[in-house]
Length: 102
Image (cartoon, rainbow, N blue to C red; front, side):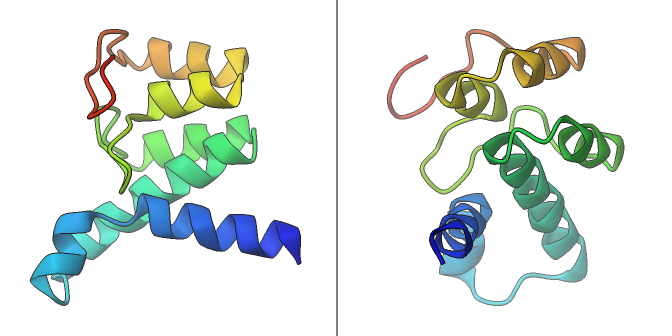
């Protein structure tokens, strides 16, 4: 149950706040949001393969989730050096800004 609740929380964190505010997304925006959500779920699960797959499908390395953190900030928060290295290899910016700073 706790794992399911954590997954639901991450799904909510991965959804774009602008999409929620603007109503139903178009197909292109929906695909972008799903890929971004997959990226953040992969980071949360410490699943390097899922992160690589999301990036291969076009996940934006500098995107922000609903709490306005970037993938590299989230991976750092999760303490996953392997995923941080994967994101850096895809040119993630170490100085990325969020509402909490860098």
